[in-house]
Image (tube, rainbow, N blue to C red; front, side, top):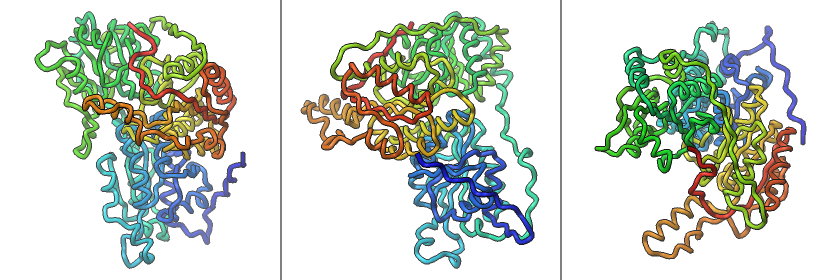
Length: 587
């Protein structure tokens, strides 16, 4: 592997030194302690790029050169999923923002913070270069992403740009978190600064602390919970804090509650705890639904689409227990997209983040330390030979990974429920947020970067479908350039199978041939060489696994190499199918 570019010496200010607007902007990024800025190069922020390299010396932040703007945003999303903090991204003009927009939407739906720096040709038409700076100058450029960002600005001076970055980072990191967009005019970047302005100290612009729960609402919740005999907790959005994780365990144990987590959200509760009933998506069924309907009190901790979950569990007219809803997500509900879900019909609303509420509930309940014993799952070993099913892959992965510290950055559609022992808040990072295909590879790179930056010993593992992998393929190059240990495990069925499954159901309803469902859905003729593509981008990739007998050994070897520091792609050929039952039945 080639050596990384050498860090250039940082420029020092002297009597002949000329300071530019972009130098102040670069310094504003440095004072936020951004370790990296992910970008795909673009002339609209040529001034900022020069300042990052020649004024700051390509340190704090260091440039991560990406092959696509959407990958740059995905890396920032994955990083934030680990650290709960924004990373900086730069996207080129209107065209770069359009490329990045899918990733920004994913981050918005995922409630992950990031600072997206955009740029535009000179808004003063007299200063535009012919053609290129005309097509790359857009009136109200931020309008393209305003429906799915927390805030945006187009500052008209370097000083205003510094304030915009300070405000933007503060807003991005304040929960409910999300992306912000700051658009820089080329003229502002290239403006000469004759006298360095006094901008104040960054410590005077902190991120606000999370609000404490209102007293009356907290007392109402405690009154319900102190008399409950069979409470149920929906463990939804939360940070990656181990302290918050332990608090949720203490709350469940203090109440004698049963719990569930959402397959689309990062880990919210240990899957091996006796209180845990199982994972769920938007469908509620089986033992899980029975436990919810048998509950005499329900707590929803910032649950994804709480309103529709309540309707599914308790249809209108059906008797239901009192419901306590803890969330401040309503602060960023917008009219452009309906990612907020249904309006929850609840009995007590606590309008803040779950961490402060859970802590206050524990104090009100006089709860002691956690004490339940966790128990590993009894999962059959895979054996035999022949084709590989998705359940085979899940079981084999369980056994190959169960004694390792890993961080599952994502799982494909159709993956069985209750298929992973998750015992730490970094054990699973949830879904892409907005359902944008192609985000999985870049999110995994960002997560691996975040794990390294925070000193975590865990290794990132992205379990991806082949469609997600191929659409976001070139993002894995950054795993090689950054020397990140990460496993991309591809459940390769040669199909965009979610749509194939839809076509099967449509044909069945209409009485038409189901065998035509694969038409226009399969990636065949020829089959893409996923391993070969990975090797061409600098990663290790053994030959595809096509026989069940070879699967356990291949998984073990791949995980061993990642533990040793390698970036690996493992292509596992699986049947076209979805798994409709959990890997482990919990009760």
